[in-house]
Length: 567
Image 1 (cartoon, one colour):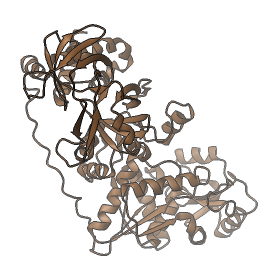
Image 2 (cartoon, helix red, strand yellow):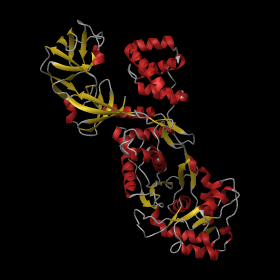
Image 3 (cartoon, one colour):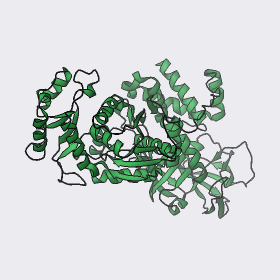
Image 4 (cartoon, one colour):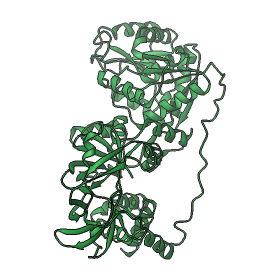
């Protein structure tokens, strides 16, 4: 336990110094579990120690924290060499200026997330780099998983990111063409219709054994093809590509090209019942859409052999396929398999819950689309797994919102103090350096301060109420008292924030944190703080970014609620 306490203290001190002298138990917990995963099953055991360490570190003050680090952990604060930022993306092999065509092909089976953002941004950046074109193509050939809601959500998310497309289409627009290409495959004996049961197909593929249906002649396959539109039911027959059943690449073991799905399509209703698989549709669509460079995440790398084999069989033009890594955040899953149960079980409020990595959630949290683009571009084009810390995105966002965020006071744990001799009103700027107007505050003797700011104050001490002036403490207890002592600036007294009690507006701040530690859902991942803010909060438009002094950046979600963005 002594060893883990030392590690907790090291992390707490470093984080506090990096964030103006204050750290948080949830941040320390996330960092300790990231570096010491064996403690994920012992969170309840180490949490009390984290709370003690965080409290003691926060009590030290910034200067003492620095001295403690120099004494206990020398070298921890040594300046890290700045990482050289990548300028743009690497050049594309075989790219000709003015001729490059890229595409972003999302399936409308869920809400867009940070992984979609990375793919769309890379597609757009390359198209613009070469003065080419970008196609948005909804890969909508699985009616069982797709909804109109998702088409709209994807388009809204991409519009918010600022992605500009030269053409928007659906794969389902070309269903008749895909049927024609299917007939070409069957007629050329590059494919066959299989009527085996799924268990048999799976066993044959696993054991690299040819299916009996693969022995059928072209005439038999064409007859079965016609029956797929009338006689056969879902699961009775599929079209399979003649790959190589002995291949070490399991993708090539006679994969599915088309199958029967009797669910209504969100756009075409029940007009069609035979639907192409992703592998078949993406190859044909990329070719006919004029795509020159097709980007997809690296888990599709083994499917490239099939992609090119289909196009060779059809004698169609072949784009270049390039892979990059998927993008996710530690403890923030993007998989629909994980997200949907969270919503259905009420563990998160919806796809815009600020703990999620969906674009709706990031927007609601206060992350700017410009920050997401800068973040994606900083990662570059690589196949290396990218599980980026959320703090990296926060740092890009902070640079953007800092100059645009109104500064307001807000009190979390209020302590009452009566200050006599205050002026009737003061006018304060909305931003310390930018021209963002000002507000007039009506003063009153009753003031809220943070309880922790009064803990180490004695009668006779002076404190400075930020933006207002100095006060001398004349009494402590349940009702602290003080006297206004003018506005002379001095550097040796504590500077604290405050809110007038009489006009304070009570609001709730949602504070999101890491959703999962490993496979374990973090039940404390959304904290609700009931706080008092300046009344000026009510005059701000919803969606405005605010920096609450000594707390962090928040986005106004509604009249009575804000969402914590980051420090």
